[in-house]
Structures are given as C-alpha cells and as structure tokens.
Image 1 (cartoon, rainbow, N blue to C red):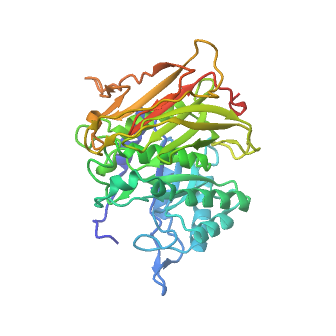
Image 2: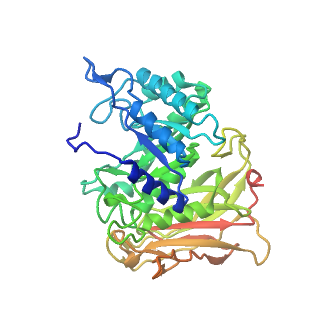
Image 3: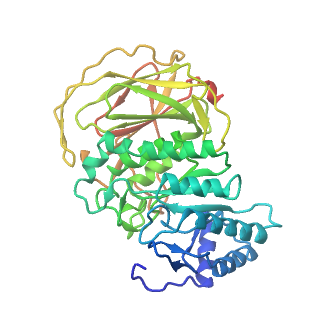
Length: 442
C-alpha cells in the first residue's frame, strides 16, 4: 500500500529473534497483518473478513516451539479514519473475536495464555466504543492506541511545542475519554499506549533523541498512568530519530535513562497530585517502587525560573489513588505540591544559562519528617545546558555506559527532608520520600 517491497519473516529469523527475546527477558507483543483477505468497499474503506491463515500458522509454530509471546496484536493504524486505509469497527470486532478464538484454541493446554490486543491505531471515540462494546466483556484483553501528538518530525517548532504546557495537556482529553469509555461499558479490556514516538515520520535528530524529549516522554508516562493506562510502548527501542538507543553505537540516548529511572522509582499506584504555582512545572506522584513512601516526578519547562517545592499530604475524595495494573482498589491519598519561591533569569534553549538570581521563602507544611531524615533526589539536566544535547547529567555527572557496555549506577543525592526541593530551570527531578505517609501506599 505504501510502495514497500513484499517483506517476509522467515522462520529462521523468527527463531533468532526469539533467542534474543529470551536472553533479554523482554516481554514481546507481535503485531499481525490485518489486511490479508480484505476487499475495497465503495466508501473507500476495506472490508470483508480477515484472512487469518498465515497468522494462525505463525502463532501455532510459536506455541509449538515453546516461545513465550506476551501478546498478539491485530493490525496497525486502521481505526477511525486510518492511515492509508481504514476498516470499520464492526468488522474489526469480528476479526478480534476470530483472533481470540485462535489464541484460545492453540494455547488451550498452556497455563499462560498470550494477550489479544487491538487495534494499534489512533483514538477515535465512536470507533473505539464500538470495538469495545462488540468484544466485551472479555474477548479483547487490551485496547491499544498510538500517540504522535507533536505532528511531523520535520517541524522546526518541535522544541517550542514540547515546552508548551497547553500542547502537552492536549493529550488529557484522549486519555480521559478512553478511560471513561472503558469504565462505562462494563468491559475487562484495559488501555495501553501501543506505540508513541511523539513526532511521526521518524522524529527529528537532536530533538526526539536528545535531552529535551524527556520533558515530553516523562510527562506522557505520568499523564497516561494517571488515566489508568497499564503499559506504554515507546517508539522505538532502536530505529529512526526517536530510538532509546543510538542507531550506530547502541549507546543509550537520554530517554533511555529517563525510562530506567521511571521503572526503578515509580510504583504502580498513582496518587492524585496537585501543583499550586506556575504551569511550567509538571508534577506526578506514585507510591515508591519496592520501598516505603512515595516518588515525586517534577518537570520544569521554564528556562529562566528555579522553583522551590514543598510537599504536603491532603485528605482526598475516595478516588484519590489507583493502582494501574488493576481496575479496582481506589484508595484515599493526595499529594499537594506547592511552589515556594522563584526568580527570573535568562535562558535560551540550546544555549548556556546566564546570570540568574533566586529568591527563597520558608517551606511551610513540608511532609512531616523525623529530625535528621533525608530524601533521595535525582536531578536530570542536559550537558552544557543545551536542550539538544544527547548527554544527560544525573546530579551533575554525565551518564555513559562502561567499556563493557554496562549501565552506569544511577545514584541519588541525599537531601535534608525539611528543605524544599530545588528544581533548576529546564530540569527534571525524581524525588523519593521514604518517610512520606500516604495511606494508599501502605
């Protein structure tokens, strides 16, 4: 359809890939071609039932070989108006049910059954609702949608968009809408972001593979979790200008370290978080992963304002926290984050910082800590203050792999828990506060 050659995935290559998956411990979702067997319809869409014979053959071989596949996803970008072409939601639902039947049959004696996912396309409320309603309550495990909300990779204004809170907030309606559909239809289906590269057509070198993109990426992880998204698949591990790894050296780009810190520090229970102050600070809080207390993520989109932040606990309505990983278990906890002091200086993105003065105000109501208590802070900044840098600094030290390819130690700084959190201009801070008592986390 797009003029590419007719590709083939030979079984020997599938064997090699599965050996790699096994060694890396990766959870693999494989996307199946949903176009086989389709015929053009008068309205310009494609119709007719999916020809599943080739897909069923691959799934059968995979199960026979004992390869562990986490899920099988039907199709790519055929929902709503589609990309290139589209398929109606009613037909798609029938095809999902066919795939579910195939998976159930092939894995009937297997204790762990792969997930069935669809449609791997852009969110369209009516189309997604019909698919969910026609596959409920349990014929579709995961509904997947794609995110390229920054537009084309060739856009020269990508950095301005990334630093604009209203552009970032444009995704709230999609996450919220999809969450609402899933809640109201009485389905067991959960939402994933199945592919997100931010800027389509391969992103933009020195933007989507540089420090600045972590503002977009971590904001997406925080926002999607807040609206009960269970998994977030980044485009890409490697490939294009939006890979987590450099395509020639395989060295991690900044977003790799952002993802790793998120994975290590942010638990699966999401806390209601409010930030009182400038809209240039993005704030998200989760129960800490594998430790007591909470982890707070603060993103400063301002290049000329240092923000000092205090954290307090507040009683919240009964939907204050949710575990993303389960549909139930809403508990009460709320984190209130307050801007304490800020003063202007000058900063051009892509350039160096210039003379800046900061005010300071006392931090009333900081979460009660025992005398001598400390918290862990991970401050992320770009090398040389350049947002386009591909070198990320953690607490002032450049992150780079060892000679053997080993990932560097990601060490926090210990800070007096009674002091406000200082968020430098154009920086990202993860803060693990082990003494912070949130009922949802106990």
